[in-house]
Length: 323
Image (cartoon, rainbow, N blue to C red; front, top):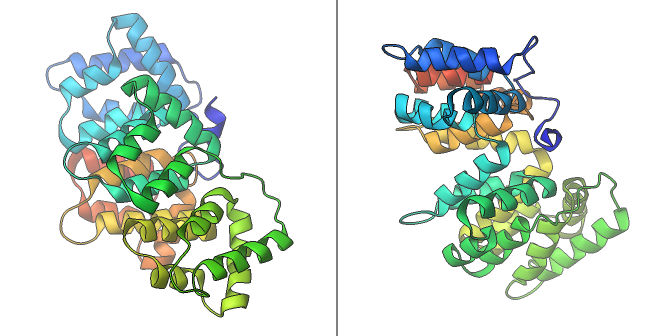
């Protein structure tokens, strides 16, 4: 079950000598005393993998008849609370809730929708859709349909369906053919055939797309990103550019998202929490390396200078080390 949510380049590892009941008891003590023992909470929840944290959640419920997340919510506050609750939420459920949040209330957070739907595998998307329906009794597709429109909606729905090819094999003939179709759908005609872009970019595997983009450059003498910027606009353009960047390097794409969340006035905690938690067991080491490479300073130092208190401590523990 957990395997599709775990990669080899995460910062979090299974805790040796793990005992869910011992951890549950320590957490209960940390919450129940006079004042909260945040240090204990942070140490336990950031030094266990999500699979282990789910066992703690079960042990906690069995021993105390209460949901750990509810006790955390009642006891903590602000961004620290949100981050700690995120840590005890199963990955598919966490993504489902993030998607709901990005479509709730006034306006839609298109960047969050784009980021989640472009960076999850087909199998992950299927689990997220299931979790979404379980919690909200509505299909993810229905909510996307009512919150978005046009080509952007079409592309999001294609991604939400989880039909992207996941194989690592690449087909050179197909890459040549797709590159020509993309060229004919955009640069080579008056007006743009958006459906062709959606079909190819939302369904082909990332390795296949990389090859297609190389072929595209041969045919058109232009980078696919430049063509997309010239031919398309709005959120649909943002979505396709995100797919191109993910195909080339997902860690670099996510490092860029973290950089945007941390730079300038105010921190985008919604994005920061999501990427740090959801990639902590997949590829956060690679994201850290890309961050350092592109921006000249470490993700660790960026978090340090932009956050504070228990929230900062928790994020730094998830981050791992300073590069």
